[in-house]
Amino acid sequence: MINNIEIEVIHKDIKNIHLSIHPPKGRVRIATPLKMSDEAIRLFAISKLSWIKKNQKHFDEQKRQSPREFLSGESHYFLGQRYLLKVKEAKDVQRVAIENKKTINLYVKSDHSVKSRERVMTKWYRQELKSIIPNLIAKWEPLLKVEVKDWGVKLMKTKWGTCNHQEQRIWINLELAKKSVRCIEYIIVHEMIHLIEKDHNENFKKLMDEYIPNWKSIRSKLNEIIFESKHWNY
Ligand SMILES: [Zn+2]
Image (cartoon, protein in one colour):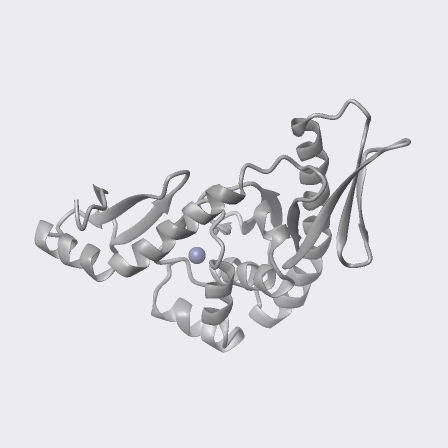
C-alpha cells in the first residue's frame, strides 16, 4: 500500500519490472524480476505514482461512459474518428453503414437486444479491420524484408498485438478497429519487427526508430484512452 493505493506485487522470472492497471476498477499490479528487493520495488512504485493516479482516473472516466448498450445517441469510435450511433430497423440483412462521416447506422432486426446489437457491431469492426491489414502487411514486408505467413484478428485484453516468431504469425487486437490507421500500422510494424527481433531490446527500438521515427508519439496517442489495461513497457 502506497499513498492509499493498493498494489499487488508478483515475483516472476522476468527481466524487467512491469507495471499494469487492470479493469474494471483500476487495480494496480507490479510484476518484478525474482531478485528485486522490496525497497527497489517500493521506490519504483513511488516514481510511478503520478502515472498510476492519472491512469486510474481514466478508468473512473471510462466507467462513467460505460457500459455501452449500442443504442442511438451513443458515441462510438471507428478508425480514430468519433461517430454518433443510430439504431435502425433492418429490412433484410443486419449490417452497419457509415453516413456522412458522422453517423454509424446500425441496422438490426426488430427484436434486437444488447447482445445482438453488439454482435452486429463487432462483426462489422472485424470485417473492416481485416480489410485494412493485408495492404499494410504487403507494404511492410519488402521494407522490413520479412514474411508474415499468417495473421489474424482477435479480441485481446492486455495487448494490441502479438507475434509468434517461430510460426511467423501475427495477431492484431480487434479493438484497434477503433483507432486511427496510423495506430494500426504502428502495431503491425511493431509485431512484424518481432519477426526480426524477438525482444523489446535496444536493437528492437533501433529498428522501430528507423522505420517509424515517431512511434513513441503514436504509442502515447494509442494509449490515451484505455480500453482494458495498460502496460508500462509495451
Ligand atoms: Zn512487442
